[in-house]
Image (cartoon, rainbow, N blue to C red; front, side):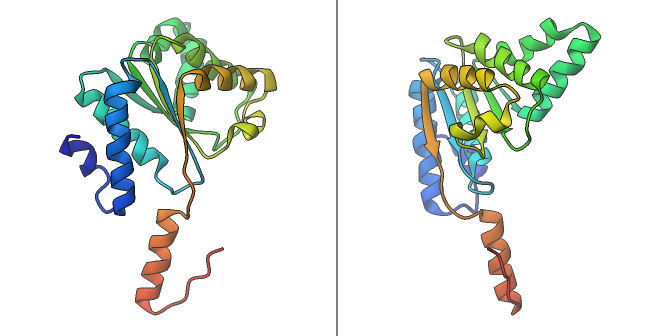
Length: 192
């Protein structure tokens, strides 16, 4: 693995560095050439976005066009383009890269229009390009994220068909850092 992705995760505990290196090799060898997806699931603060960024950088370093977006930003941009009559043009932003990184799907519930935009992107990229996606919700909870359970099921079906799913468990790095900082200051930190 090149040094560039590792620089994105400076300060992480060694197991996370090893995980990024293993995933970067996987991304280089399997994800983009085979148009496979990587789904990173887990609670907030466990490093899903860092891993997704590192995988995106690894894909870029390997010569693949990569685009990063937050899920909320993508649907807002597509909805705005739809209102301006330029949705077909804007969709190309998300369809043309070899690798599309979609961060933070599931943090906020999506209305019907937003769910439809996510479906359009996932459906049109199916077997044409890789998606690296992060979510704080397991697939069983996606009916709560998407306004329509049928759309949720169709998205999951297309994403999982050629996916590597990593369910990351653990405490938030940010919360652990906060607790450690409070202990150093001599104060107590009550975090549940």
